[in-house]
Amino acid sequence: MIDQGAFHAKGPKLDSLRIMIRRKDQTSPMQAIIVQALTAIAAGEPPRDVAEVVGKDPSLSLKVVRVASSAAFYAKPVQSIRHAIDLLGPLQVGSILASLQMVSNSDSLSKVQGMDQQGFRLRSLLTAGTARTIARKIGTVDPDLAHITGLLLDCGYLCMAGFFPREMSMVALSASQAPNEDVRGIEKYYLGFDHTEVGELMTGEHGLAQAICEASRWHHEPIFASEPNRALVDIVHLADWIAAKLGYTTFPNSAIPKLDDYACKRLGIQPADLESMFGPLMTEAMQHDSAMGDLAA
Image 1 (cartoon, rainbow, N blue to C red):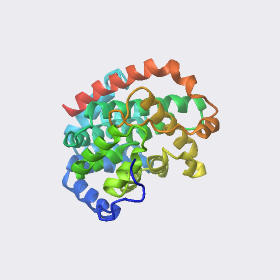
Image 2: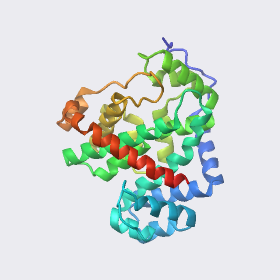
Image 3: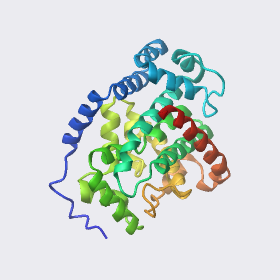
Image 4: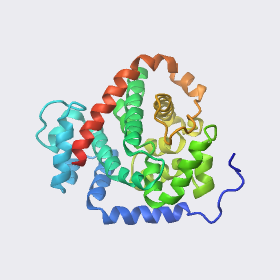
């Protein structure tokens, strides 16, 4: 068992990581445009302004239009970014952009022994799809917001894998060998922080909605989310747990996150209620993953 009092004092600090994230965004033009577009969407800027931001990169625009036309989204021809926003809404276009960002950054996972790129993508897609399904069921949270939050929920791992592949390989090995150990404790042992702290840092740096930032930080402990955002955090908490129950854990054989029964009670649902949706959710995730292959092409 990891000694929780033995965290590495000489590990990287979050403030240093913040600087590294900013530098990386500045050296990747497409990433910078995606961040600008997501920030504009989060701020509720007019569709024309969002389309103008995405349109700065013709290649990015083409990829978003292709995926918006796919079976995972509109399933009919989409003519332009503005057309996609009008048809799908800004948050759905934000989901496409977040998917592209995830595909681009998931290359960093190849540097980490014990992490699977496609498995990570499917886990994120299952979490997003399940979150949207639960949001539709309870009716108090925007399903599109739940979807994009689910997609970005574990973005901290992409950052950690990109900057600290050696340490993350050690995390993966330890997590796989200690199936009863909370992976966040293992992450803190090797890095000094865990993926939820990094996720909050990334989403905050990119100017995303406070609700998304809180979900990134507290999806394992939803009770700590602020009252206005707790329903969203409860939703993605349960969605994250269901993805793990379906076999998509972050690391092979690692522990399934603990389910907060009070989150279920606050939402007024039981995990068993969603079992009938597992098959359709897997189908949706595979369709989305196929569309994301077009994005990466």
